[in-house]
Image (cartoon, rainbow over all chains, first blue to last red; front, side):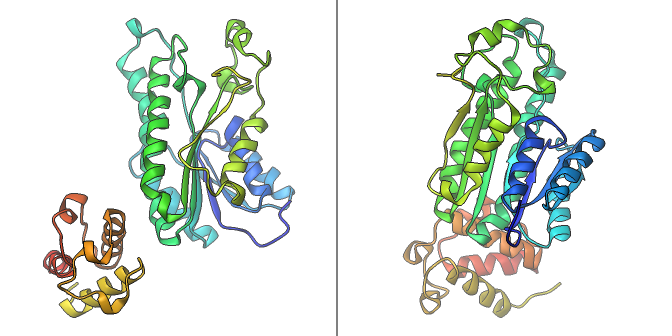
Length: 246
Length: 80
């Protein structure tokens, strides 16, 4: 529960459920005003905000399809005006999968995953850096995936997007490091969310920890990377995968 | 909106001074290299200019700028 004045504003994309919802809650409990972005699941986003508010935090639902070129400006200007503080934390969490083996992977499945999981994160980061550069402070956390680190057949599009996101994270981190802004990636493995429902047991048997992770276990790592304690951590990829990428 | 060279000069010097160099060192003839103004500083300057004057300067516009005067002249030219 926040005990002091709000620290500033945080935007979490894809926060109506799963990992994003857990991240939104964790940041709110650290005193951030949180923009809970959703694309279609408004009820889910409202439930996340209600839970944060009942714990004494501040949050707002903010709908936007982040693949639209205008979404970044809409999200940031709306949050800046609602919370009257610059957005100093961006968590690029929204992501989709459209799995298929490469020989039969369609153009649409390729393009939509790259657009959502990589291009949208770039556009949001570009917009986020404006106030962060001025403030000489900021935290960007990109939610990548174990699939960006090791092969997972059927996910060539997702893997390419997430590996791209990791390279993007490192490059941007180096560009802005001297301004007190950190940019890091978190690479979850198999996490209990709607996205992993139906995953076959074979993948789970590869996890050294022999279990799926929980969204809260990913959120805890994001919370650390956003905290003051992580001020010297930048360009890093933190695996949260029960040892799957090790 | 029309802006005067003096207005732009004042704003540019004020912005560059926020990046570190002493305002007194920031003359039209001073080079960014002498002032230790790097490429990221110039990106920030471009954003200030865009916010204040609606002039969009891309990286390619900025890369040939050598001196403070070059930047001021470019901004005034584009804003005119």
